[in-house]
Image 1: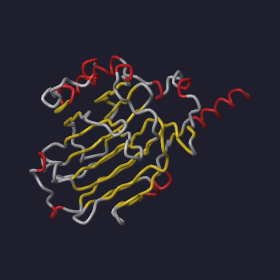
Image 2 (image 1 turned 180 degrees about the vertical axis):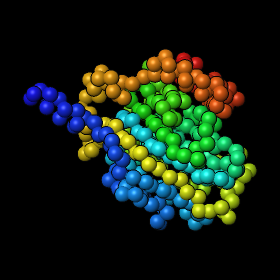
Image 3 (image 1 turned 135 degrees about the horizontal axis):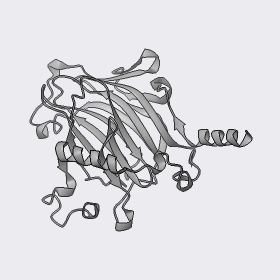
Image 4 (image 1 turned 60 degrees about the vertical axis):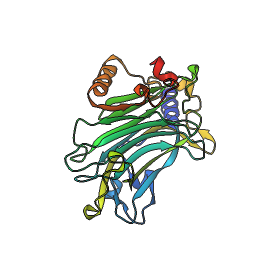
Length: 283
């Protein structure tokens, strides 16, 4: 009895898991002058964009490894020029970052889902996808899983990208800097849609993106310490800290990449005339 109690107590200290998301408790709206709103007793958050400003929010917690889920419904209709984001990022000039960016488009054209990974301020690891559904018609779940071995980007439970820790061959991997979760809706019509050729139609403003179901299973960083005292030991428990893609998940990811990937830095030899990045050759 005492052992089971101590075990449950230890697990509660190691992980934070918001089973029932509450935006009032878990995030703060950081900019937008009222364009970000939390309603439904903290269960729904909306961001809006007009010609004057966009809006954004961030998690109250910082994480050093975690699994972050967010249900999002993107800007409907003519969303050209707009960008909706969900990402993890550390502060400073040599920051780490793990990105989901949703690039809007003209009515009837699909969104572009842009992913990237930065370590010590260095990115250039873009992969882009079209989605196999309309992300504006309903809520869909977007997940960033970040553990010491890999980063997995997931859409509705289907992995679309895996970025492995390949420090052994000289590829940088984010593992030392705590990051917060951020999200924003902003105007980027100088580049977002067809390289900036299609501009934002402000007659359609305000543009609105909606959020619910924020779930954080993570090692929370506070006062210079992690809530996971020994990540290497916890990684043996079979949790997200040691999660990898099994053969079924790998097959599903290959299906997405074959049918819906529209850009992969690992195949862009013109961009890297001196040779593709090492992790591309090792994959």
